[in-house]
Amino acid sequence: MKAFEESLLYRPMIKEDDDILFSGTFHTNGLVMPDGELSGRLDASTGHLSCFVGGLIGMGSKIFNRKSDLEMAIKLTQGCVWAYNSTLTGIMPEHMRPVMCESLDECAWNETRWYDEVDPHPERRGNKQSSSPAYGNPAKHQPSLIDLQKEKDHALNDLTNGAKTATDAAKDEVSDYADSVASKAKEGIAQAADAVADKAKEVITQAVDATGEKAKDGLTKATDTVKDGLYDAASAIGSKVEDGVSSAANALKEGASNSFDAAKSAAKDAAVNGANAVREGLSDGLANAQTVPDTLNTDETAELAKSLGRRQLEDMDNLGAGTPDTSQSTAPKIDYSGLPNTAPPPINTDSSDEKSEKVNEHEEYAKNLIKFHHLWPGMVDLPHKGYILRPEAIESVFYMYRITGDETWREKGWNMWQSIDKATKTVYGNSAIADVTAENVKLLDQAESFWLSETLKYFYLLFSDPSVISLDDYVL
Image (cartoon, rainbow, N blue to C red; front, side, top):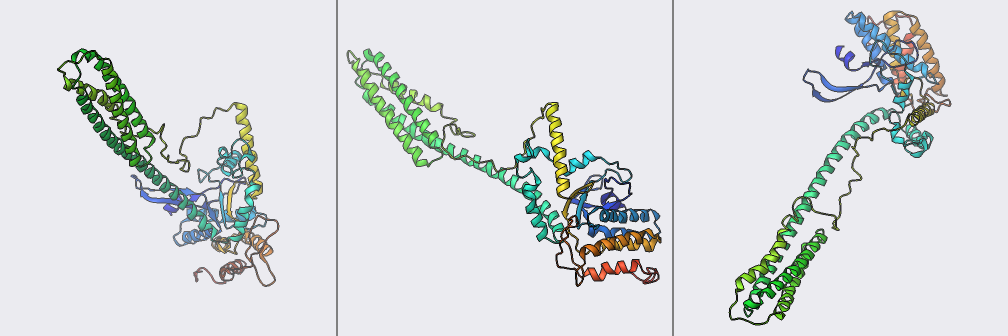
């Protein structure tokens, strides 16, 4: 009983002064907190099926002589009677979710809180009610929900809870998987760029070395008197090689997303251009020579030509390191638009007039939902509005009468019977109905076996003498 009271029991926020309770739905991940408590949360979702709890606790209170439990049982049973009295047909729906109070003892009516729970995310609709078909005028999207409710029967309750749990788990799994894919994609692109850059660097280095050797051979006949001219030639060589290497680097970036063969071809072309530049520079330098001496420091001049090219290679050391530069690349980019948006909401800087307008819009929208879904004060949602001839409510009313002897329970049971018989009666029996909040009741042409074996049994025994199937002698 302690676990039930702490984890499942709650008081609904209602306009009336009725002292009532409901049993909700407890969601847990199975983890035990350091203080020994089970991790989880109480959901206000309840329904006709849970109405048997009042009779169950009432019988337990008599067996174990626990007067406080009997008081709890009376309040739970009265909660189901309140739900019967709240609908247009006088019948409790299969599944509903009221506003849950923070305390079991006192709970003052708060209309603003009711609106907030009916319309919990007004910011998702944009600035105007009609701006989004998903969150705008409920008449634009509700027909599909009505059609769904008409097609579904009592299984909708279990499906609703199961779908919500599965959706939350799927969102987390998809988000984690997307992060993993994005990380691996970035890593793969960086590795590919490193490989292409290293290979291109190797090709260009070989080309520059070859260029230096060609320069050494071509300068064997030059003289010391034309050294200045040769240095001018070497500068021209460096400039040309720099342009060639720069072209190779740009080609590398542009081809990062393409095959390695394309990058290799671009590097090769750049190396050839560098070699041609050497020949052009040598020709220009030799044209300025006045005389040709017998000796020449060819090693020094060759190293100068190679160093001018290698200086450009040093600038390429970090070309493929880290995250590739995609500012000029044609490589395909990862589309993150479909991933969940976990960014924090923007800071609200609305003026007081704008805030007032949004508050009024929020209340108006909540009122529209309340009217459209036939919600009564304190009710947030009616996931399943039907009634399939269930016995649980009248079962607890019967037990309360037999346990307490209070004649008011017979009066409550009689009102329930009149409402059920009026809404479900057919030529040959009684039928489940699609919507207990509708003015024009739709019969579903079906009846569960518990209508005869349980529901009618408890109605019959409620109005029979207590000696008929006495609870002192029989277990029902």
